[in-house]
Length: 318
Ligand code: UDP
Image (cartoon, rainbow, N blue to C red):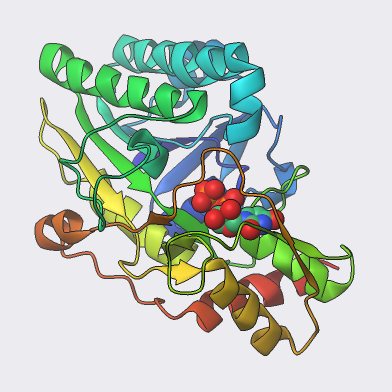
C-alpha cells in the first residue's frame, strides 16, 4: 500500500516506518522535525519536512491510500503550562491532516492515541469501555482526536483505528528513544547506568502497590509496530475502532530499576523524591479487544528483554 507516515522521524513513527517497509509498503514520511530526527527515517522511505497544518500539498503530491499519524506534542508537564501548543498541533493540526486526506479521497487512518485519555482508572486492567477522563491537556487533546475520528468515520466514510498506547519502550531496527527532553523512566534509568546522568529520582514510594512504587504496562515498540500493520487494513469504511495496546502485565518503577541494573551490569543510584503530580498508582491495559479482533499477540513481554533492546540500541549510538 502507498502510505504517508505523519511523524515518522520520531521514536515510534520511525520504527513503524521500518516495519511498513519490511512489509512491502511504499512509505513517505511527513515530519516537521521539531522533535524527530531526519536520520531516524529509514532509508527506503521518502521524507518531506512539513507541519500538519501544511500537509495538504504533500498529500496532493503523494496520493496515499492510508495515513499513519504519529505527529504530536507528547510531554504531559508541558501540556499543562503551554496548552495552546497541544490544541494547535495535536487537535487543529490533525484536523488539517484529515481535511487534506479528504481532499485526495484518502480515508484510511491509524492514529496514535494514548492511555492518558482514560485518566485515573476506576479499575485495572483498563478496558476500552472505561470512562475517559483525562487529567492533563495532552490526554485531552488525544481524546479530542479520537472523537474527531468517530465523526469522520460516521459522516465521511473514514476507516479509522485509534491505538491507545500504554508505556512504549525498547528498540527495533536500530531505532530507539532519542528525546532532547527525556522524561520517560527506562531511557532515564539507562542514562544513569551509562553514567551520563547522576541518579534516578523515583517519584514516590508510598503508593498502594506491593513495593510502594508506581506500576506501569511497558509494551515493546516492535509489538506496537506489529499492531499498526494489523490495524492498517482492519476497519471497513465508516468504522472507527479503538484498541488498547499494552502487554497486560504491570511492572513497578523498582522492578524497572532492578531490570536495568541486571541487564547493564552497572549501578543505578536512586533518590526517592516526591510523587509526580497526576501519576496514578497503577496503569495496566487490557488488550483483549485487539487480541480477539486482530489476532495480535505481544512477543516481547519480559522486562529484561525490553530493557536490553533499549540499552543495546542506545549504546550503539554512543
Ligand atoms: N518515573 C520515575 N522517575 C523518573 C521518570 C519516571 O519514578 O525519572 C516513574 C513515573 O512516576 C511513573 C513511571 O516511572 O510511575 C513511568 O513514567 P514515564 O514518564 O516513563 O511514563 P508515564 O507512565 O508517565 O507515561
